[in-house]
Length: 305
Image (cartoon, rainbow, N blue to C red):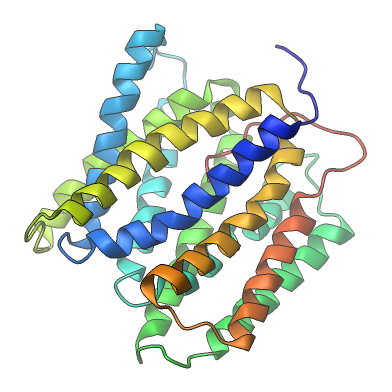
């Protein structure tokens, strides 16, 4: 394995682009949600990305179905991934894109807590604790600000926190199981395959409306989620992880909720109050603190954002 190096200008530019890409995803979900029900939309996202991933793996000669003892852990990781995105898509039926992304990006703080409890050598440091306190203070501040929100927006906010827990649980599982020694591409294959296999049938079983009509904006929003986010951006993220120090890259994740809030306000008309802006800033500051690199770097596998 090649040694990881500190990221340079190219890596910084790619990370900013990735954060903007992930931040825009909530807007795309809202746009497609006008014509596609939540679980159907989430399942289609995974199915589109899965097809592209399989074709890409065949082109690269990568084995995705080879027995390596990770099937059980992979199925569990896929189930957690499916839950995470079910909560996100269902939550966006109740709350705004801005509020959802702020709730979702508390995941790194939950991850620090989970790693401390379940993975040896991942003890929480003072700065981690401060980051967790800051982020959760931001969540309390944000949830307390209900101005301009629908009365049941708290349901969507709560689902956003549950999605963050699902994301954190997936990351801890990957680090604590045999999934840590296989390629990130195969981990993504597990996640996309299980989520597509679960969410599409579940959408039909619970009687969702499915797809009511397709317009150009809806098709573009679906393509953005499946092709750009769930396939292309994750492969770029994994490529960066193979070449650069993970902790230096992860610090940039604080930009994602800032981009998400900005896109929600500018493109969807989400209300931005002083208290909610402060809440987003607290969550972003918390993300920075929990991801700041220690003096001695360690190389580890990270779940995709």
